[in-house]
Length: 220
Image (cartoon, rainbow, N blue to C red; front, side, top):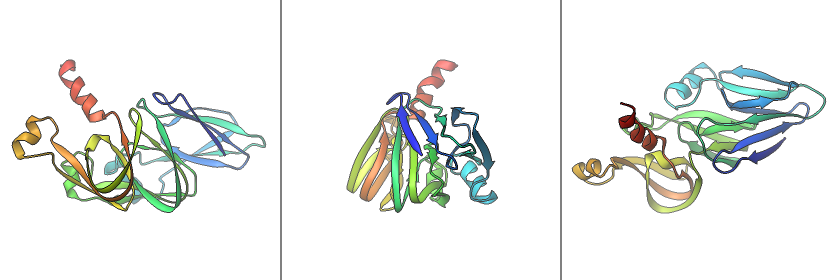
């Protein structure tokens, strides 16, 4: 399988060329175009309960699409995402990574997608009480709104919840007030995320929540 990233970094999309018999798994609705020799198989990945948890509590579609080259020559499809921004390629080697809602784009068939409990405190941060967790051996493509920023965490690090994209299990993620009770909300920051541990986390330079807050008063 050959994957070429085009349109970086504002409008990144993936040109995926599948050899005969190869396949790739993507989020529902991510396909922009494809050759006629490619078959689509839609399924509730991981079973009904896992798929529903991924939809209701993980911010992802309950359905995943598998694209399979049924022909005898290479076939190409284009995978995109709704929001403008970059797509990050991440290699898994018997390890895992937690993904924020909406950041999963596609992955190789060998990657396992699960929904894991995060805790009720995340409900107040508007992030849901479950996390999408990718593990195993293979490649996963992660979408960001804006540009990707990689940050090595050693100890503690504070991030706006809308700018965190992904983090490894070696980093603990907690939700807290940005300051005191009054200053947290008068400053416009409200709740923030506290990262503790050691590992590389992925951030995005733009926040969909920030965009919504900016648009709402102008749409009334």
